[in-house]
Image 1 (tube, rainbow, N blue to C red):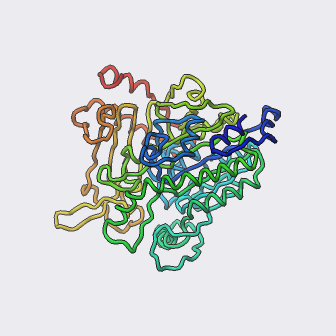
Image 2: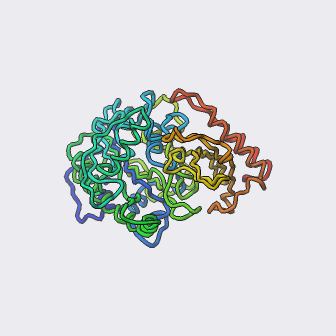
Image 3: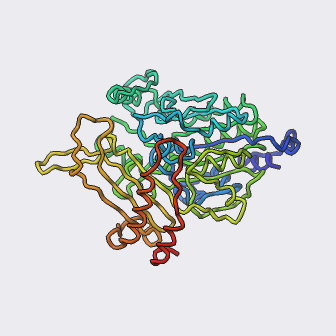
Length: 485
């Protein structure tokens, strides 16, 4: 039955009977296989499954049609390395602590791969770009962590590609020098090569397995041969085509899964690490801010054995919810403290997601390449590092911005007065594009959400210790004041 479902999903003609009904003969303790598919820099609203009409992504559409689609899912950090640390630990960056590519994931963190490995899973990862290199510690718990890259993140056109061995140095200057060299050489691989490596791993896998496959997909590829803003213009123009071109690679991956006869007992989770600004708010890229185009992500669960088809949940889901949801579907009880909550009760029950708020942050603007350029009274330009933290509810988004020292340019003076702290408040019900900052017009709402944001800053330093938020108290306060339903 479920093997046939996947064949229909992929549009494969014919029905293979041998092995199609073996799943129900297995022990009830048999764990499902888990396939986590991550697409880098993928906006939900550029998938036809989420209503985009200019390009089609039929494989992803089929996953959504035969599974559960989360209509309003969000990441907690708007760039790759810390966002995937949040996925793999089920915790916000306030707990896992990985906020920069000059850091590593603390060994105290427990990862999804570790938990699954302890319960008998064969674990493997195939990642498509250097921000997920094993040097950052995201390989914890994986039997195989394939970060063999073959192409550069920054294109020069005339420079031969050489292998630059990955290394991590606590010295910022040394790590900065290494990172620049790595980006010009073997620091990513095309989606086709990711699929090939994942297919090879699947053919040798035994059940139960956990395979994480990361596609670089629609991410920008700066080309030094272009001048001015040409790279940005081309990225925006080509983005829909790159999204559409990624879909056949996922289809090829699922065809391999079908051929291995693992499909009947496989849970597929499809998501993005973050979205992408394509000109909104005068920004092209990600990581600098917390606006909706970079915060909102696609999230789909496909598991016909347990999950309903054609179900769409409209409540707010988060990337940190993937960890507990996968474990619940695998029948694994986990006693550690997580920031995420399982979405399974909502997927199987009345469809109500209990999460009232999302905490989000980015410290990418503390890196010199993404810092704010501030004009000084003397006419010079000064680089200022910035931290942005925010709270998003169903109706409101509050973002606080504050200056911070640059991580990779410690020799530059830190002058906080050059970039004073600021606050933004958006009424998402009436202003979904976040065009009007109403912090001054809605001081009571701003104060309530500011208090919530400050509670996330007051967290224990030891991973796994959670801050228990009184979401309902805040919501009731806003309701009484007429700012929430």
